[in-house]
Amino acid sequence: MRSLSRALVSIALLASTSILLAQAGSSSQTAKPGLTGFVTRSGSRLMINGKPFRFAGANLDNVNLASNRYSLIISITGKIDAYYPSTWAIDDAFETLRKMGGTVARVYSAGTQGSPLAIEPELGVFNEEALKQLDYVIKSAADHGIRLDLVLVSQQDFYVGGRDVFSHWRNGANFFEEPVVSDFEQFIHTVLTRVNSYTGVAYKDDPAIFAWETDNEIGDSPVAWESRICSTIKKIDPNHLVINGNVMIGPITSPERLAEKDADIYVEHYYEHWSQPWNLAADADKVTKAGKVMIVEEFGWDRSNCTVADLKMHLGEVEKNPNVAGDMFWALRAHREPGKLFPIPGEGGEWWALYYDGLDTGENSAADMHRRALILEAHIKRMTGAK
Image 1: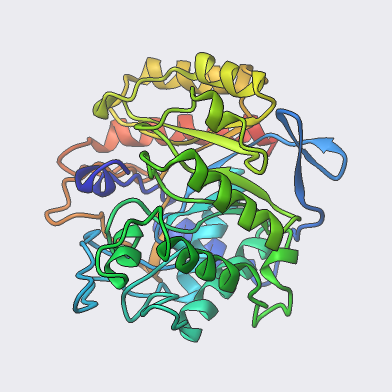
Image 2 (image 1 turned 180 degrees about the horizontal axis):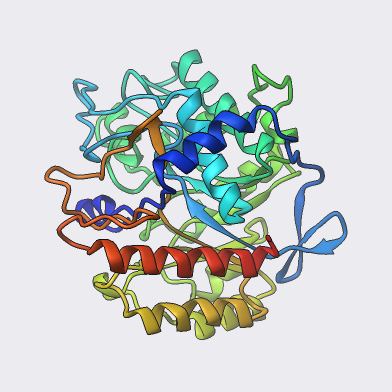
């Protein structure tokens, strides 16, 4: 999400209400897949239980904390347009992704700061209710056989909070300098050492977590800051991979960035609409030559980003390129409650959003949307081997 407009460009992949409700209603009576073993890195390849691991999945941006408008947080007052999704809604989202064959989900709203619903509502104060919300997200993901990419802080000052909140707490101090760096490290330590209230397992010991992501799109982060944060995560939690979340302004072409010893995975976000073209082969080649892992972490699927033919071509590139470990589209949304979908982010309902059965949103036609949904689903199943 590069800007407020792009944050509002949410892609919500949804199965029909009747099918999903049947799935959710029966899921408690079906066998849970469960998860064993941590995803590890061997050079530029991912491994799980001694075998190569490739994946495809989705961004589940709002599964931990949701907002209908992606409103800006007002740091001084803490006012925010946000709410916790119910446990039913969380289960429904993961069940939808599991039915599609997805094995990894990225949770943009995992790290939250600066509002009454945040994990850290005030500097040094941690919210047990918000942490229990994340507890359930992790538990539900594991129950559905899905691993999580958990983002720790955002570039944008949206409803999740973000780096501007940390700076505000220190009267405008630079996010990349002391004392703010230590403040962020305190947040990281609190989250990573958390013991899940549902499972009794510390986050740092939970195989349901695929990786910790340093940040979402902080494009101007100094390499020294990135190295320190990656090292901090690894020292607290040596079990999990670390994703360097820097994209765009600080591209992955930097040799110094690719040489960070505690960073395992590098990412790109591809949106033709925002002049971020698919440079997959070149990006993956640079990351692989540095001995690190490359994933396509976000991409735009709709007609403003690509034709149907181009979408198929891009997904085929991912499938055929062994230097790409996986991909996740932006972004899956399921039901807020039985019979009621999460609304399309943005006032007016004309922001790009994909519903599985197709819906005319003003920006996208129902027929085109459904066609592309089927293309995405088929790609995920080819990547993961799902039936």
